[in-house]
Length: 206
Image 1 (cartoon, one colour):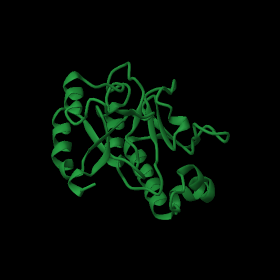
Image 2 (cartoon, one colour):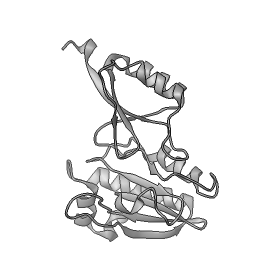
Image 3 (cartoon, helix red, strand yellow):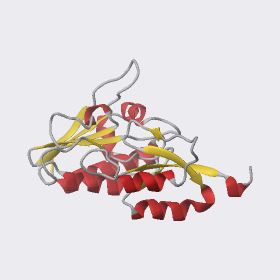
Image 4 (cartoon, helix red, strand yellow):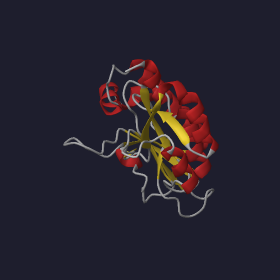
């Protein structure tokens, strides 16, 4: 295959909002870059995988973003933030914090795909407790969970690492965790294995 015909896979979604939604204009824009026999892959993390020509990546991403789509790299990166279907309004459910978490960390390169999740109340619809890094809003503060694993025989609920955090404290700790994982994680070592290897105390303080 000639390089001009080479395709790459990118992840797209409707951004961080009230649940996982796409509008008609966004769907029509995506369909422009698909043959009638091609399929979209819907991931468990509220993303669609689509293949696009590598030599048109920049212009296609700009077009997607112009209709409100968010685009992310596929592979060993921090995934876009998984959220619940917010039901009580943007401020009450902490939507600005969810958006800021996604803005700061989604797309960062890490040793192995890292999944982050957020929920605005203890019901936990965003599944933060079975994600690598999970955030749960409780009253006006935030609890931080790490090491959740939702699949396999060794699946388990994440551990409460820090509680009653203010937004800036939350961002700072999550940044340290991801930086430490990026620096000290082994190649293709999952976050679940990494944090169990180094231990709770070292996760933030390396």
